[in-house]
Image (cartoon, rainbow, N blue to C red; front, side, top):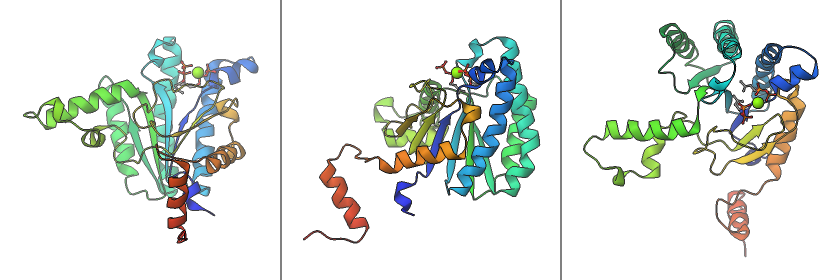
Length: 250
Ligand code: IPE
Ligand code: IPE
Ligand code: MG
């Protein structure tokens, strides 16, 4: 296997739960339940495929606009996931990280998140980051505010992109190599907007509960075909690739 064509970090916008249930004339909650169970399967598939970091969008800062009953169900599911999955996460060597604006969360939820993250902190196989009440715009702003708090005597003019990075919620994860969005929409919906500046995007019409290991493999195959130039020319990228393989051009 050519490891350079394998993404280290995959981000997923798990979209389409509502439409999945609508197609089956079932309440939206059923779709969310199926979505949560699909996350389990995709985490396993990522481990089998040697992915090191998986970051998933579970609830956006804009999802508060949904009916309160749906918001309550989503949080209930999240709490249940935290409780029921910890043993499994530990057994599989998964390190859990939860990111987002948690300032308004009740203390009990804070404590549950902290406990779950602490219990899985030794996981070395895969980092699973769940974004809850996360927004890319929130992340950039909170990072700048945190930088300013840490450097009270410095002016914002002195802040560089590199200096901001450690304050982003995703730190110390590398930037995502591949971002998958299920559910047929071609937008980021305020997910990792800073971190995805050079991420390869993959959109599929499959609804999240239907996105399985085979679909993941299709996304990985698509990724393996991409030429990541990072602003360089094709020639520069090719000579860099050749140098990495130990081939020197004559
Ligand atoms: C994604 O599925 C889950 C969350 C946003 C929490 P949706 O609930 O957005 O499903 P659709 O887009 O309505 O089908
Ligand atoms: C994005 O899905 C958020 C999550 C998957 C958590 P949405 O369904 O909320 O996105 P929009 O509103 O269609 O852009
Ligand atoms: Mg949606």
